Image 1 (cartoon, rainbow, N blue to C red):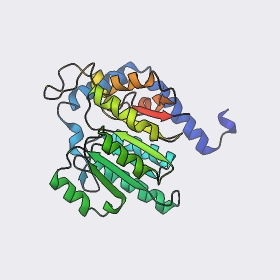
Image 2: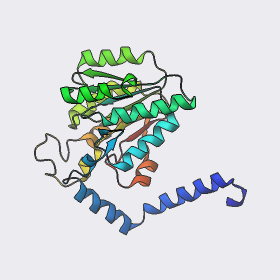
Image 3: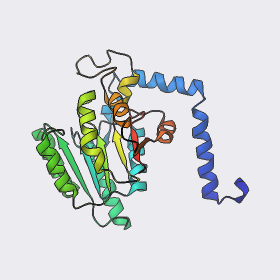
Image 4: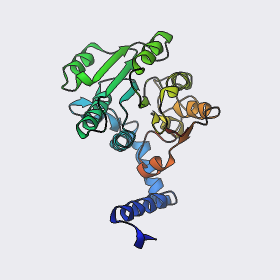
Amino acid sequence: MKDSMTPNEAFQHECEERVESYRVNDSFLDAKNAFMLESTPTKYSYNFRWLGRPIIQYPQDIIAMQEIIWRVKPDLIIETGIAHGGSIVFSASMLALLEISGAIDRGKVLGIDIDIRKHNKSEIEKHPLSKKIHMIQGSSVDEGVIRQVYDFAKSYKNILVALDSNHTHEHVLAELKAYAPLVTKGSYCVVFDTIIEDLPDGMYPDRPWGKGNNPKTAVREYLKSHTEFEIDKKMENKLLITVVPDGYLKRVR
């Protein structure tokens, strides 16, 4: 079989075989689990920036989003949760690259946050990519905010959604019900911090979420009645180090 492949196809096949082997590599999986246990309470993900703004993501998940955005080629990326703005700046930079390459005509990032802090908003608005970013302040599950998002999305035809705000079951489930329908076929709804369900209870003593009440439990509930989405396990298996286990949701119909 490999003899009939092009060099690119052969390399891709080798990658897929490697990734598949990780699923049964117990020592590798143990190392991955140990790293997640140690890196979560020490706030490892808080140490990285994208084009000058703190992104608060694991490098592996940043690479995963790059792969997905390049493959999907969305013209609108909707993100709940802005924080310091690194993630929306990252998405804006990817859309700018898609425009430069001729893959899309124009792209926009729509960021939503219940509290866009003044100093963060100022830095985002001063960023060279700010023209590709639109922000809405308000709860992502507020009916008025949802209407604003749907009105904004009318001008776009290929949409990707990333959910990374309040991580309680109830809130994430409401976000999924509100925004997942906007995701176009072949694109993704990425639900961040599903890892909370896989970590020991008590990891987030100052937060309202934890085991049994988190993004992964919301994903499980949502998928029971929404077969148009499937979990992209290949992405998770490839990354290993990720806060999005079972959270890369691909729209297949």
